[in-house]
Structures are given as structure tokens and as C-alpha cells.
Length: 108
Image (cartoon, rainbow, N blue to C red):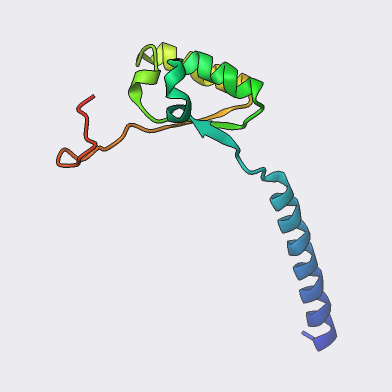
């Protein structure tokens, strides 16, 4: 391979890689949201919290305990997931400690 051909090929490859990386970075939007624990005094369950998240135009919500759900049945959770998707809100779930010897452990 000649040096000119090598340099031209390398330059084109690097330029195309930079272009694709810029497009990929532009497509990734940061998530903005809240944790249900931060407004727990309102006593809202997951369904109402999703409505509120959509009203506030956030893109994510953290349900940090299992008590926020009306049920743990598959059908209910799938419906909740679909509602979140329809509203454009990504759900993150937490449950506290999972180690039986931990201070925050709950057997729920």
C-alpha cells in the first residue's frame, strides 16, 4: 500500500467515525426526574406519580420502595410500564437494602 493511499484512507475513516460519534451523542438525552421519596408526604401511588411526572415534563422517575405500587402482579406492572412509555417517562425501581444483615433490609 502506498503512503498516500494509506493516509487518505485513514483520514476518511477517522472523519466518518467522528461524524457517527457526534450523531450518537446528539441522540442521547440526559434523564431528568425525581424520586417518589422526595414527595412521599403526598401519599401518591405509582399511577398518580407517573401523571405528575408527565405534568412536570420529566423523563425519569425512581420508585424507591415497593409500597408505591398498588399491586405486584404482572398485569398491573405491565400496564404501569406501558403508561410510563406512553407518557415518555422512564421508570427506575428500588427497594432499599437487600442484604439480610443490613440496616435497611426489609423482607418485602
